[in-house]
Image 1 (cartoon, one colour):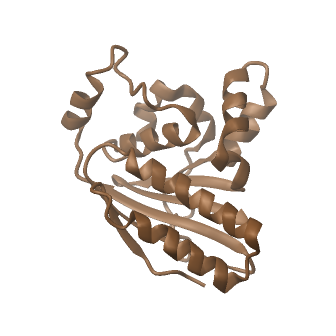
Image 2 (tube, rainbow, N blue to C red):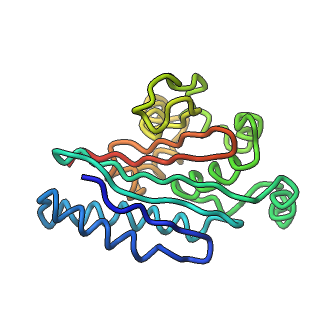
Length: 206
């Protein structure tokens, strides 16, 4: 099943409809109360991230899947340029976005950076930890069935596995993961980046 595609913008239009579509999807897939609640929480985390995303943007959100293998998909595009970004970051003494707290906060800022950079890795030195989840090899561009084909991919699962391996060195990051709603509910969160466009996928096998 695939829900309706909801158009969302920085003015907040469409955000409430996201939860309505999630409820419809839960009913169609026969989710029990616990599964429905988890899907709603993941949608609320996504909506919360969008509400705090800086600058003008437009996005399309939908849920799709079968046999309870569920994908929350988000496609984003923005008009924010480097000059606007620099002005926004100038209020920070470090030149970085100090509000990028928590996993979703960092994901939000990676999305903001990706809107402006041809090569996201140029600016991810501000968030060296996030580089641990970056797969610099783009996915097979021939696979037209994959919405992220040809995109540069950041994976929460890959990031989480690497932090787990070096838990002593990344104690704060592991603690952040353990407290994160999305990191505990989703099987993976992937951000696909290409040509100033972003495709975000949250996957859960219920």
